Length: 395
Ligand SMILES: Cc1ncc(COP(=O)(O)O)c(C=O)c1O
Image (cartoon, rainbow, N blue to C red; front, side, top):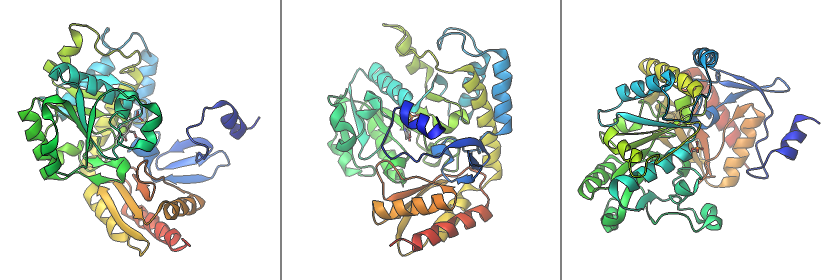
Protein backbone atom coordinates (compact mmCIF):
# COMPACT_ATOMS: atom_id res chain seq x y z
CA UNK A 1 0.00 0.00 0.00
CA UNK A 2 1.43 3.42 -0.83
CA UNK A 3 2.00 6.02 1.86
CA UNK A 4 -1.04 8.15 0.95
CA UNK A 5 -3.30 5.11 1.34
CA UNK A 6 -1.74 4.23 4.70
CA UNK A 7 -2.33 7.81 5.86
CA UNK A 8 -5.98 7.85 4.85
CA UNK A 9 -6.68 4.33 6.08
CA UNK A 10 -4.89 4.20 9.44
CA UNK A 11 -4.49 7.75 10.72
CA UNK A 12 -7.38 9.44 12.48
CA UNK A 13 -8.26 12.62 10.57
CA UNK A 14 -8.47 16.16 11.93
CA UNK A 15 -10.41 17.27 8.85
CA UNK A 16 -11.46 15.75 5.56
CA UNK A 17 -9.26 18.12 3.59
CA UNK A 18 -5.69 17.73 4.91
CA UNK A 19 -2.84 19.47 3.11
CA UNK A 20 -1.46 15.99 2.44
CA UNK A 21 2.16 16.83 1.62
CA UNK A 22 4.12 13.57 1.70
CA UNK A 23 7.30 14.41 3.57
CA UNK A 24 10.61 12.76 2.88
CA UNK A 25 12.95 15.06 4.75
CA UNK A 26 13.31 18.62 5.98
CA UNK A 27 16.39 20.83 6.21
CA UNK A 28 16.76 24.53 6.86
CA UNK A 29 13.93 26.47 5.22
CA UNK A 30 12.85 23.56 3.00
CA UNK A 31 10.71 20.43 3.21
CA UNK A 32 11.35 17.78 0.55
CA UNK A 33 8.46 15.62 -0.64
CA UNK A 34 8.81 11.94 -1.53
CA UNK A 35 8.96 12.87 -5.22
CA UNK A 36 12.03 14.98 -4.30
CA UNK A 37 10.28 18.29 -4.93
CA UNK A 38 11.41 21.00 -2.49
CA UNK A 39 8.96 23.31 -0.78
CA UNK A 40 9.80 26.55 1.00
CA UNK A 41 8.27 26.38 4.50
CA UNK A 42 6.91 29.88 5.03
CA UNK A 43 5.31 28.93 8.36
CA UNK A 44 8.10 26.95 10.07
CA UNK A 45 5.77 24.03 10.87
CA UNK A 46 3.40 26.58 12.50
CA UNK A 47 5.98 28.65 14.39
CA UNK A 48 7.98 25.66 15.64
CA UNK A 49 11.13 25.44 13.51
CA UNK A 50 12.17 29.07 13.96
CA UNK A 51 15.82 28.18 13.38
CA UNK A 52 14.98 26.12 10.30
CA UNK A 53 14.31 22.41 10.10
CA UNK A 54 16.84 19.94 11.50
CA UNK A 55 19.36 22.47 12.74
CA UNK A 56 22.64 20.52 12.95
CA UNK A 57 23.50 21.79 16.44
CA UNK A 58 20.06 20.88 17.79
CA UNK A 59 20.37 17.42 16.24
CA UNK A 60 23.77 17.00 17.88
CA UNK A 61 22.46 18.07 21.29
CA UNK A 62 19.57 15.59 20.98
CA UNK A 63 21.84 12.79 19.78
CA UNK A 64 24.34 13.38 22.59
CA UNK A 65 21.49 13.07 25.09
CA UNK A 66 20.12 9.95 23.33
CA UNK A 67 23.50 8.33 23.97
CA UNK A 68 23.15 9.07 27.70
CA UNK A 69 19.52 8.24 28.42
CA UNK A 70 15.95 8.72 27.24
CA UNK A 71 13.01 8.47 29.65
CA UNK A 72 13.98 7.35 33.14
CA UNK A 73 11.15 8.51 35.41
CA UNK A 74 8.05 10.73 35.46
CA UNK A 75 8.71 14.49 35.66
CA UNK A 76 9.81 15.87 39.00
CA UNK A 77 11.32 12.86 40.75
CA UNK A 78 14.86 12.25 39.51
CA UNK A 79 17.61 14.76 38.87
CA UNK A 80 18.05 14.90 35.10
CA UNK A 81 20.81 17.19 33.89
CA UNK A 82 19.11 18.40 30.66
CA UNK A 83 16.03 19.48 32.64
CA UNK A 84 18.04 21.22 35.35
CA UNK A 85 20.24 23.08 32.87
CA UNK A 86 17.23 24.16 30.82
CA UNK A 87 15.46 25.43 33.95
CA UNK A 88 18.56 27.46 34.82
CA UNK A 89 18.83 28.85 31.30
CA UNK A 90 15.18 29.92 31.17
CA UNK A 91 15.48 31.63 34.55
CA UNK A 92 18.57 33.47 33.31
CA UNK A 93 16.61 34.83 30.35
CA UNK A 94 13.58 35.90 32.40
CA UNK A 95 12.83 38.48 35.13
CA UNK A 96 13.57 37.33 38.69
CA UNK A 97 9.96 36.49 39.53
CA UNK A 98 9.82 33.90 36.72
CA UNK A 99 12.35 31.57 38.26
CA UNK A 100 10.68 28.15 38.31
CA UNK A 101 9.76 26.00 35.30
CA UNK A 102 7.46 23.04 34.97
CA UNK A 103 8.24 21.21 31.72
CA UNK A 104 5.60 19.43 29.69
CA UNK A 105 5.14 18.29 26.11
CA UNK A 106 2.31 20.27 24.51
CA UNK A 107 0.98 23.81 24.64
CA UNK A 108 -2.49 22.69 25.60
CA UNK A 109 -1.16 20.79 28.61
CA UNK A 110 0.89 23.79 29.74
CA UNK A 111 -2.12 26.14 29.47
CA UNK A 112 -4.21 23.62 31.39
CA UNK A 113 -1.55 23.45 34.10
CA UNK A 114 -1.40 27.26 34.25
CA UNK A 115 -5.18 27.38 34.78
CA UNK A 116 -4.86 24.85 37.59
CA UNK A 117 -2.04 26.81 39.19
CA UNK A 118 -4.12 29.99 39.06
CA UNK A 119 -6.96 28.17 40.85
CA UNK A 120 -4.59 26.88 43.53
CA UNK A 121 -2.89 30.22 44.14
CA UNK A 122 -5.98 32.45 44.13
CA UNK A 123 -8.58 29.97 45.42
CA UNK A 124 -10.87 31.41 42.73
CA UNK A 125 -12.26 29.47 39.77
CA UNK A 126 -13.22 31.67 36.83
CA UNK A 127 -11.12 32.99 33.97
CA UNK A 128 -10.97 35.89 31.57
CA UNK A 129 -10.04 35.10 27.98
CA UNK A 130 -10.16 36.96 24.69
CA UNK A 131 -12.62 36.56 21.86
CA UNK A 132 -11.35 34.40 19.01
CA UNK A 133 -8.18 33.44 20.87
CA UNK A 134 -6.79 29.94 20.68
CA UNK A 135 -5.03 28.28 23.61
CA UNK A 136 -5.25 24.58 22.70
CA UNK A 137 -7.91 21.89 22.61
CA UNK A 138 -7.80 20.19 26.00
CA UNK A 139 -10.99 20.93 27.92
CA UNK A 140 -9.27 23.58 30.08
CA UNK A 141 -7.85 25.57 27.17
CA UNK A 142 -11.03 24.95 25.20
CA UNK A 143 -12.97 26.69 27.97
CA UNK A 144 -10.96 29.78 26.98
CA UNK A 145 -12.22 29.59 23.40
CA UNK A 146 -15.06 31.92 22.48
CA UNK A 147 -15.82 30.28 19.14
CA UNK A 148 -19.12 28.42 19.46
CA UNK A 149 -18.31 26.60 16.24
CA UNK A 150 -15.34 24.85 17.86
CA UNK A 151 -16.67 24.45 21.41
CA UNK A 152 -20.41 23.84 21.16
CA UNK A 153 -20.25 20.04 20.77
CA UNK A 154 -17.95 19.67 23.79
CA UNK A 155 -19.99 21.49 26.42
CA UNK A 156 -20.15 21.50 29.36
CA UNK A 157 -16.54 22.64 29.55
CA UNK A 158 -14.82 23.25 32.81
CA UNK A 159 -14.76 26.79 34.05
CA UNK A 160 -16.79 29.93 33.90
CA UNK A 161 -15.02 32.14 31.40
CA UNK A 162 -15.68 35.81 30.74
CA UNK A 163 -14.75 36.74 27.20
CA UNK A 164 -13.57 40.17 26.28
CA UNK A 165 -12.37 41.70 23.03
CA UNK A 166 -8.61 42.17 23.28
CA UNK A 167 -7.75 45.89 23.69
CA UNK A 168 -11.23 46.79 25.04
CA UNK A 169 -9.95 48.70 28.06
CA UNK A 170 -13.38 49.92 29.14
CA UNK A 171 -14.80 46.40 29.00
CA UNK A 172 -12.28 45.33 31.64
CA UNK A 173 -14.18 47.36 34.25
CA UNK A 174 -17.24 45.12 33.83
CA UNK A 175 -15.48 41.87 34.76
CA UNK A 176 -16.46 40.43 38.18
CA UNK A 177 -12.84 40.39 39.34
CA UNK A 178 -13.56 38.81 42.72
CA UNK A 179 -14.33 35.55 40.84
CA UNK A 180 -11.37 35.60 38.48
CA UNK A 181 -8.43 33.26 39.09
CA UNK A 182 -6.56 34.21 35.94
CA UNK A 183 -6.54 36.19 32.74
CA UNK A 184 -5.04 34.35 29.78
CA UNK A 185 -3.73 36.48 26.96
CA UNK A 186 -1.53 36.26 23.88
CA UNK A 187 0.46 39.40 23.14
CA UNK A 188 -0.18 38.87 19.46
CA UNK A 189 -3.45 37.01 19.04
CA UNK A 190 -2.12 34.54 16.52
CA UNK A 191 -5.12 32.51 15.40
CA UNK A 192 -7.32 35.60 15.18
CA UNK A 193 -5.02 36.73 12.37
CA UNK A 194 -1.91 38.03 14.19
CA UNK A 195 -3.52 40.93 16.06
CA UNK A 196 -1.15 42.65 18.53
CA UNK A 197 -2.26 43.59 22.01
CA UNK A 198 -2.03 47.30 22.87
CA UNK A 199 0.39 48.48 25.55
CA UNK A 200 -2.32 50.41 27.39
CA UNK A 201 -4.60 47.37 27.52
CA UNK A 202 -1.88 45.15 28.95
CA UNK A 203 -0.88 47.77 31.48
CA UNK A 204 -4.47 48.12 32.69
CA UNK A 205 -4.82 44.34 32.88
CA UNK A 206 -1.72 44.16 35.07
CA UNK A 207 -3.14 46.85 37.39
CA UNK A 208 -6.49 45.09 37.70
CA UNK A 209 -4.87 41.69 38.29
CA UNK A 210 -2.69 43.17 41.03
CA UNK A 211 -5.66 44.89 42.64
CA UNK A 212 -7.87 41.81 42.66
CA UNK A 213 -5.35 39.02 43.36
CA UNK A 214 -5.83 37.57 39.88
CA UNK A 215 -2.97 35.93 38.01
CA UNK A 216 -1.91 37.34 34.67
CA UNK A 217 -1.02 34.46 32.34
CA UNK A 218 0.80 35.11 29.07
CA UNK A 219 0.37 32.46 26.42
CA UNK A 220 3.64 32.89 24.51
CA UNK A 221 3.39 29.47 22.92
CA UNK A 222 3.40 31.04 19.49
CA UNK A 223 4.86 34.49 20.15
CA UNK A 224 7.77 33.34 22.33
CA UNK A 225 11.34 32.22 21.54
CA UNK A 226 12.16 35.05 19.17
CA UNK A 227 9.15 34.86 16.86
CA UNK A 228 8.18 38.51 17.35
CA UNK A 229 11.71 39.94 17.50
CA UNK A 230 12.63 39.52 21.17
CA UNK A 231 13.13 36.27 23.05
CA UNK A 232 9.75 36.81 24.75
CA UNK A 233 7.24 39.25 23.31
CA UNK A 234 6.33 40.60 26.76
CA UNK A 235 9.79 42.24 26.81
CA UNK A 236 8.34 44.74 24.33
CA UNK A 237 5.50 45.65 26.71
CA UNK A 238 7.23 46.26 30.04
CA UNK A 239 4.60 44.14 31.77
CA UNK A 240 5.64 40.95 33.58
CA UNK A 241 3.17 38.05 33.87
CA UNK A 242 2.59 35.86 36.92
CA UNK A 243 2.72 32.79 34.71
CA UNK A 244 4.42 32.50 31.33
CA UNK A 245 3.48 29.61 29.07
CA UNK A 246 5.85 28.48 26.32
CA UNK A 247 5.73 25.77 23.68
CA UNK A 248 6.24 25.29 19.93
CA UNK A 249 9.73 26.77 19.13
CA UNK A 250 10.88 26.08 22.70
CA UNK A 251 11.84 22.52 21.73
CA UNK A 252 13.72 23.43 18.54
CA UNK A 253 11.57 20.82 16.73
CA UNK A 254 11.15 18.40 19.66
CA UNK A 255 7.90 18.24 21.68
CA UNK A 256 8.36 20.64 24.55
CA UNK A 257 6.33 23.13 26.56
CA UNK A 258 6.78 24.94 29.84
CA UNK A 259 4.85 26.81 32.47
CA UNK A 260 7.13 29.31 34.19
CA UNK A 261 6.23 31.14 37.39
CA UNK A 262 7.66 32.01 40.79
CA UNK A 263 8.93 29.23 43.01
CA UNK A 264 6.50 30.41 45.68
CA UNK A 265 3.48 29.89 43.43
CA UNK A 266 4.78 26.62 42.00
CA UNK A 267 5.13 25.29 45.54
CA UNK A 268 1.33 25.17 45.84
CA UNK A 269 1.34 22.16 43.49
CA UNK A 270 3.51 20.22 45.92
CA UNK A 271 1.25 20.39 48.99
CA UNK A 272 -2.29 19.45 50.11
CA UNK A 273 -2.65 17.51 47.86
CA UNK A 274 0.81 16.73 46.54
CA UNK A 275 1.31 16.06 42.83
CA UNK A 276 -0.89 18.94 41.68
CA UNK A 277 0.17 18.28 38.12
CA UNK A 278 1.75 15.09 36.83
CA UNK A 279 3.26 14.44 33.42
CA UNK A 280 5.03 11.19 32.55
CA UNK A 281 6.92 12.64 29.62
CA UNK A 282 7.13 16.21 30.94
CA UNK A 283 10.63 17.55 30.32
CA UNK A 284 11.76 14.56 28.29
CA UNK A 285 15.57 14.64 28.52
CA UNK A 286 16.08 14.58 24.74
CA UNK A 287 13.60 17.44 24.28
CA UNK A 288 15.25 19.43 27.09
CA UNK A 289 18.72 19.00 25.56
CA UNK A 290 17.37 20.14 22.17
CA UNK A 291 15.51 22.99 23.83
CA UNK A 292 18.57 24.38 25.62
CA UNK A 293 20.49 24.37 22.36
CA UNK A 294 17.53 26.03 20.59
CA UNK A 295 17.49 28.78 23.23
CA UNK A 296 21.23 29.38 22.87
CA UNK A 297 20.93 29.54 19.08
CA UNK A 298 17.93 31.88 19.32
CA UNK A 299 19.90 34.27 21.56
CA UNK A 300 22.64 34.34 18.88
CA UNK A 301 20.14 34.69 16.03
CA UNK A 302 18.35 37.62 17.70
CA UNK A 303 21.69 39.36 18.22
CA UNK A 304 22.46 39.04 14.50
CA UNK A 305 19.10 39.40 12.80
CA UNK A 306 16.93 42.51 12.71
CA UNK A 307 13.48 40.93 12.91
CA UNK A 308 11.69 44.30 13.00
CA UNK A 309 13.34 45.30 9.71
CA UNK A 310 12.12 42.01 8.17
CA UNK A 311 8.60 42.67 9.46
CA UNK A 312 8.71 46.12 7.87
CA UNK A 313 9.95 44.71 4.56
CA UNK A 314 7.10 42.17 4.40
CA UNK A 315 4.57 44.89 5.26
CA UNK A 316 6.03 47.31 2.75
CA UNK A 317 6.11 44.80 -0.12
CA UNK A 318 2.76 43.11 0.40
CA UNK A 319 0.63 45.85 -1.11
CA UNK A 320 -2.12 44.83 -3.55
CA UNK A 321 -5.71 45.91 -4.10
CA UNK A 322 -6.87 42.45 -3.04
CA UNK A 323 -4.87 42.61 0.22
CA UNK A 324 -6.71 44.55 2.91
CA UNK A 325 -3.82 44.79 5.37
CA UNK A 326 -0.89 42.91 6.85
CA UNK A 327 -0.94 42.62 10.64
CA UNK A 328 1.32 41.09 13.25
CA UNK A 329 4.63 41.64 14.94
CA UNK A 330 8.12 40.49 14.00
CA UNK A 331 7.83 37.33 11.92
CA UNK A 332 4.31 36.38 13.00
CA UNK A 333 2.32 38.05 10.25
CA UNK A 334 -1.10 37.71 8.64
CA UNK A 335 -2.01 38.84 5.15
CA UNK A 336 -5.70 39.75 5.27
CA UNK A 337 -7.80 38.97 2.19
CA UNK A 338 -11.45 39.91 1.69
CA UNK A 339 -12.71 36.38 2.26
CA UNK A 340 -11.77 32.75 2.82
CA UNK A 341 -12.00 31.84 -0.86
CA UNK A 342 -9.44 34.48 -1.86
CA UNK A 343 -7.07 33.23 0.83
CA UNK A 344 -7.62 29.62 -0.20
CA UNK A 345 -6.84 30.31 -3.84
CA UNK A 346 -3.64 32.14 -2.82
CA UNK A 347 -2.68 29.16 -0.66
CA UNK A 348 -3.24 26.77 -3.57
CA UNK A 349 -1.34 29.06 -5.95
CA UNK A 350 1.60 29.23 -3.52
CA UNK A 351 1.63 25.46 -3.12
CA UNK A 352 1.86 25.15 -6.92
CA UNK A 353 4.88 27.47 -6.72
CA UNK A 354 6.34 25.26 -3.97
CA UNK A 355 5.72 27.63 -1.08
CA UNK A 356 3.93 26.26 1.99
CA UNK A 357 1.65 28.48 4.03
CA UNK A 358 -1.64 28.12 5.87
CA UNK A 359 -4.65 30.07 7.11
CA UNK A 360 -5.42 30.85 10.76
CA UNK A 361 -7.90 28.88 12.87
CA UNK A 362 -10.14 31.84 13.66
CA UNK A 363 -9.20 33.90 10.60
CA UNK A 364 -9.51 31.70 7.51
CA UNK A 365 -9.35 34.82 5.32
CA UNK A 366 -5.74 35.40 6.42
CA UNK A 367 -2.55 33.95 4.98
CA UNK A 368 0.05 32.92 7.57
CA UNK A 369 3.63 34.15 7.40
CA UNK A 370 6.00 32.77 10.03
CA UNK A 371 9.31 31.89 8.35
CA UNK A 372 12.57 30.99 10.10
CA UNK A 373 14.03 33.98 11.93
CA UNK A 374 17.12 34.09 9.71
CA UNK A 375 15.17 34.52 6.46
CA UNK A 376 17.16 36.84 4.17
CA UNK A 377 15.86 40.08 2.64
CA UNK A 378 16.39 38.54 -0.78
CA UNK A 379 14.17 35.60 0.14
CA UNK A 380 11.52 37.95 1.58
CA UNK A 381 11.49 39.86 -1.72
CA UNK A 382 11.11 36.64 -3.76
CA UNK A 383 8.34 35.33 -1.51
CA UNK A 384 6.43 38.62 -1.54
CA UNK A 385 6.66 38.86 -5.32
CA UNK A 386 5.24 35.32 -5.60
CA UNK A 387 2.42 36.15 -3.15
CA UNK A 388 1.58 39.25 -5.21
CA UNK A 389 1.67 37.28 -8.50
CA UNK A 390 -0.62 34.62 -7.08
CA UNK A 391 -2.89 37.26 -5.56
CA UNK A 392 -3.26 38.88 -9.00
CA UNK A 393 -4.62 35.59 -10.30
CA UNK A 394 -7.55 35.51 -7.87
CA UNK A 395 -10.79 35.51 -9.90
C1 LIG B 1 -1.21 30.54 21.22
C2 LIG B 1 -1.34 29.05 21.31
N1 LIG B 1 -1.63 28.50 22.50
C3 LIG B 1 -1.75 27.16 22.63
C4 LIG B 1 -1.58 26.31 21.56
C5 LIG B 1 -1.72 24.83 21.73
O1 LIG B 1 -0.48 24.22 21.62
P1 LIG B 1 -0.38 22.67 21.28
O2 LIG B 1 -0.89 22.46 19.90
O3 LIG B 1 1.09 22.35 21.42
O4 LIG B 1 -1.20 21.95 22.29
C6 LIG B 1 -1.28 26.86 20.31
C7 LIG B 1 -1.13 26.00 19.13
O5 LIG B 1 -1.19 26.40 18.00
C8 LIG B 1 -1.15 28.26 20.17
O6 LIG B 1 -0.88 28.84 19.01
